[in-house]
Amino acid sequence: MSARTDVEASRAQASSGVTPESLKSTLEQKLGATHVEIVDMSGGCGQMFEAIIVSPEFAKKTTLARHRLVNAALKEQIAAIHAWTPKCHTPEEWEKKKAGA
Image 1: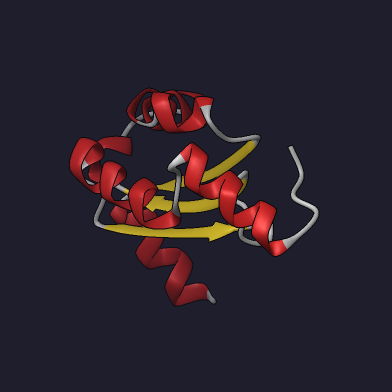
Image 2: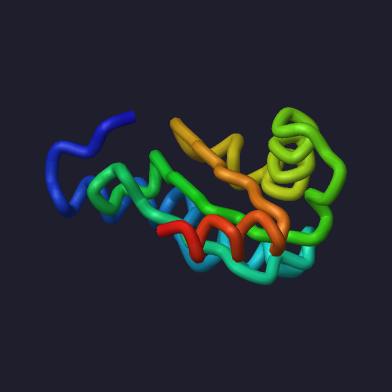
C-alpha cells in the first residue's frame, strides 16, 4: 500500500494504528528492550519500518531466533504493515557497536 498524498498517508497510519511509538512501547514491554530506535521509512504512512532493538533476551540466540522473538512480540502490528526490518543486538553487542562507530 503506498500513499499518494500526505492526507492518504495520515489515513493509512491512522487506520493501521501502527506508529513508531506503539512499536517501541510493545518491544520494551514484551522483550524488556533497553534501547529501541524505530524509523518510519515510508514517509509517514506507517507501512515500512526499520528498527534497532537492544534486549538481553537476545543473548545466546541466532539472528533468526532473535527475529522470531521480535516478530512474535509484534504479531498484530506486523500484520498491519508492509515492510519490517529489525536489527537485533544484546546490550553488550550494542555497546561494542557504539564504541566502534
